[in-house]
Length: 301
Ligand SMILES: [Zn+2]
Image (cartoon, rainbow, N blue to C red; front, side, top):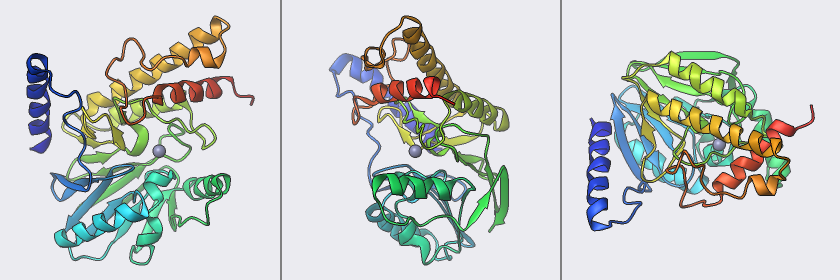
């Protein structure tokens, strides 16, 4: 299976890196790449959030749509794997790097599905950024949605505010593959969208619920990842993300307790206990996350 192979490659290269001083980020997630995961389910990586897909003779589902320019080559590549109509486009949440390609698929997707808060969050974000009217889901759900599509069962769950106020967890039950959207930033500091309904403490609860819901054999797909760790993982990685969020909260609380200003609390690029959590593409990511947690913890009700 590709996951264990990739792990092997990462472990092997780490050993080599020690002796030959190989570049640190050897395993950058390749752009424009289709990666089968299990049983007709796979992922596509380019710019923006990881796209998930189910492509078989009797079903075609896409999870997230990145951007207008990257979703087109993804759609074209999927056509080579399935000539079925596009049954569903699922949005894991409202962010533009996950929904920006919606318009390009709207003409052919039978339905666009998302948590019920997502269309309003998309519109509010578009208004704040001066963007035009976004293409939003026409089917929404509150806590749970499921559908048999081809020979797969697709389930969406909402466990409460976390990365945003409308994060869906997408399960392909028979493949035992789960797309977490941006509920997991794999070993990089997360974006925490406080104006978009995020809750850092809620996020911790959501990851624990997801950990209970799935199993050690489940393969998880993550919205974003550190190039050295990739965008897939196991149930244990959910708890790594949880622990990182806990450490973030602890760091901000300690700074507040010491009477520090937010600029001082945010003047680090790594949390001491999490040296791997660093994004070479966004070196100030931790500062942004700290500022968001600060805003989250100190906001006026
Ligand atoms: Zn996001």
